[in-house]
Image (cartoon, rainbow, N blue to C red; front, side):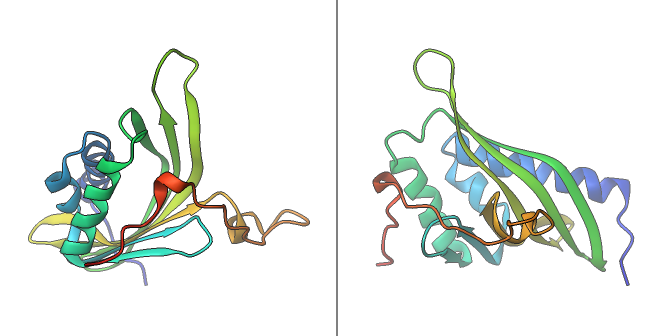
Length: 167
């Protein structure tokens, strides 16, 4: 049974998506971390091995890592075509398109990523946050209705996106 989401819930979830992008793209680590529940998880299913960041300290480390990537400043993360479904009281599921542009140097600017977010959301103390945010490349099961498609093909990890090992 799906739970009812109020218009305010939907607006707050849209704002969460915007706060996530603004936090990441402006290097505001605290704002980025605040988008997640204390036990929240971020999963990047893009490269050969999925990267999983669990809990506040891991997510903080991820945000700090983004700030150290030389060509990261100038990137803008876009979330569009947001579909939100209430799951139970204080819980929701969302899917949305994810695009990343890179605004460096003179135009035209590069489109760096096309994929989607698959989100489990939880409402804690009257604010919506990510219980789990998964980012995936526009490939795999999302395209399974097309003949000859539906198999996930991971992308090679660029050297600048090397995952910093946990201390």
